[in-house]
Length: 368
Image (cartoon, one colour):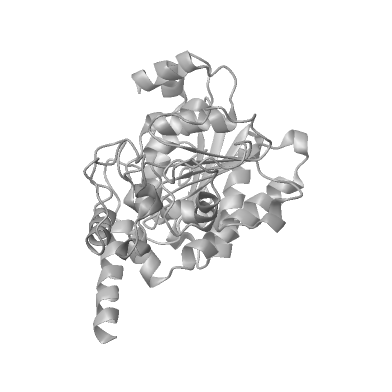
């Protein structure tokens, strides 16, 4: 116990110092619509390292117009760092107040993006969202940790879900109070541990009478309850790495190749997309592989999984554990490293923004 506490204290000091470090290439914004800028309710120094990056990263309105060739708006991004308030409820209240200050509820789309353990938001996913929406979108994120996701799960596995629940309840509660014809479409987004906590941020009873529009969960960890239940209940004949669930009107899965339009029934009002790669050990790690062959290793295996992969008791479990640790090492589009192109496919299918046909989407992918 003494050694564990000492190790965690050392990690806490290291990660907190990294999170607080101000980077010279990310100066405080001068735009009043940005978190940490003039008039913002959030101090730039308390956004945290990942929060400052999320707010400062493009695209801006000019970049969107240049790449798409169409009129755009300036995307709105709100980020509340761990140091901005003392508890999740206060940070959620700050997030809502900042959204209201910048007019986020007047946009056509509002996204609650749950970060990973360090507070990171994948810029590929953020940029794909903002290009596809022509900038007519506000994104809000609230940090719950500055530890790497694995350490965050080990040290305080419930804290991320607690923050995600506070943020969802606060933002959704205000959104629901608005007239239906005067409020934005509401979406959830999360990658990795962010996908898990986004999944845990609400339950059916909260939303069934007035559901949000949809969710994009990317590289969902094998612990995610909705992912596990849907994968187990997949239609007969569909592989575990690309399940088909029901008629596809509510839930769809996709991978490197866009499978979101493959013979499904028309989308319903509430939509959920799982984007996952068969080579992603974060999603497909299976503790039972110690003594039995995982479902995703049944033929046909995913196109990005080595054909030499064989199940061997104990050995395969150790291989998967190794891949779990190094899941961010493969090139973009493999493992746990998700590509802009695949995010863009998911957002176009999920939100169905006007004027985005296959030709125009391909042109965007080639330009980015």
